[in-house]
Length: 309
Image (tube, rainbow, N blue to C red; front, top):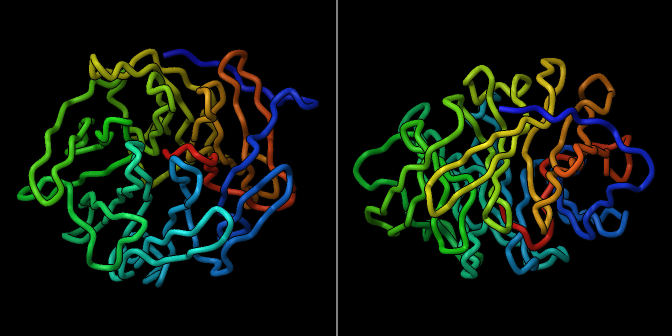
């Protein structure tokens, strides 16, 4: 694997996207348009917005209860809201640990998400719902008879999901309520990875490369990208674009529209590690820039309008 040194860019050499959604100031959903913040929710419990392919909606999860504070004891609900702040709806009951939703890229506006810890610790199942869904209408798309750790990250335009299952990687052709088809994908490393996002061209992928193989710890992870061969079922030529620095966190990478820039959030901006900001990294030359509107406020989990993960 290779390493490109990231460096801070001066001036306006990297422009932010016209529209971006974030979790803002721990934690509300907001959009950023031409340098202005538009706050959409006020719960202080809303995480990880992701845009629909048509740019009309955002899906995210809301923490209903924090339990004892550990992720396994949270109870969350999937929610959807219009990019303009209208049409808020709760899609799941809030009785489970429903995490990290994304819209599928096949034009159906279907939403896939992960239900964690329903059958015990380190167990997860993938479910499917829609923007018009209601609690209880979601369908399981994970293996119907073999509960395990199965996690969806991103998808392809043909409807296949990019998933972890039994710590291997697959493209899953779903069969809601039944057994789908799993095609194993070869990865460039045996290290664990997470938060994967396929580029809009479906020729590249970005993810968090995990140095200690423990997905619960983020300070050892580095942002990586690699080439993706969908037909050949392989990911190859991995490049690490952030340094391994145990004092900082770099997380949740996303693509721009043409696959030339990776956005991610990090606490390396300062304030003793309590302040997260959004950074843009340009693949062509390794140039990096903090693109946060106000560099004294928190911005996490960036999502470009019209580009689901």
